[in-house]
Length: 412
Image (cartoon, rainbow, N blue to C red; front, side, top):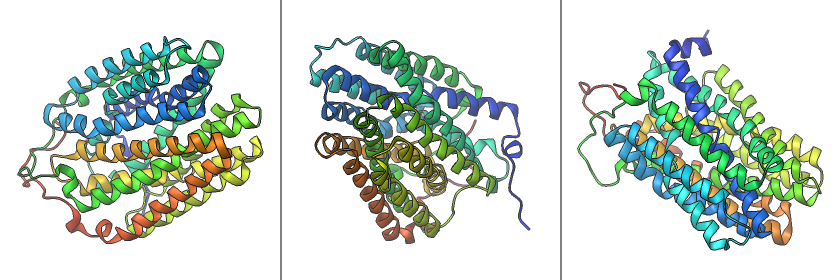
């Protein structure tokens, strides 16, 4: 009979708990950025199409810069990259929050792109530290599942917090507030001893492609691209559905339910020992994710119905994410782990940008159900990619070359 590792056994040291706790606080503002930028742009311009473009610009710029920042972290350590990136991002978001109603849409798009370009690679940095938190490698999948689970707290609290600040103060204040909180919390995370001391293992002899020379990493990045489109379209679709029903204020709580569902799904995955290990399990998770997100289109006529379905849809997110992260860690060539996680995040951000950019005009012209239909279709694409790449995800030879056994551990 097998036993499931408990949270206390996974996070056996108080330092590990402090590290993970500070990382969650540092990533809470990141869950506010997308909805805060979206709502602020819609408020200033009155257009969901412009709002989708602003949100998409932030995501695309972050997608472009993430692998470059991840490679810098692999070469130089985490501290400088985190501190400089957080400072520039915060200043840009404060400027966005102070922008008047007369600001041209192009300027809003440019500011969002600048913020995305400099956003520090917090999630990639955290996930490169996770292997150093466990002494038994068999517990690592459960740790990835646990990290994905507690991360959902940010998606439960982030959107309502951003919209709450926007309602009480202003939408611009919500954007600026998110930037200031991100700067303070990122500095706190970067001050953690594990983050300051971390250094990448010496890489294998450098070849073109970096972490993308692993075929499995390419497949996982493409899966993240498609699932990111699901999430970007859902974000815009929920906001559009709430507005069409005359309940704009319900958008934040509905997105919070989405995160709450993922929290429940992640708890279940953690108790079962982590995400799936084989491509067949990942395909099943992706199929469930596609079906339930697409089903939101049938619920768009009622806030209560959207709430029920999005809670169920959220339950597919954390188990899927945990499975992908564990596979990224397994297949990343040695010395490129931060870069590999950054490519996964880049693909997800690009997908979110595509989803938001497509869903914005769809909501404007055909209503929220069209955006949810696109989300379901993007999920089906993710299933197809996993099917085509299943051999890569099950073949140990998909790993890139690894460092010699005598190489030092990634965590100093």
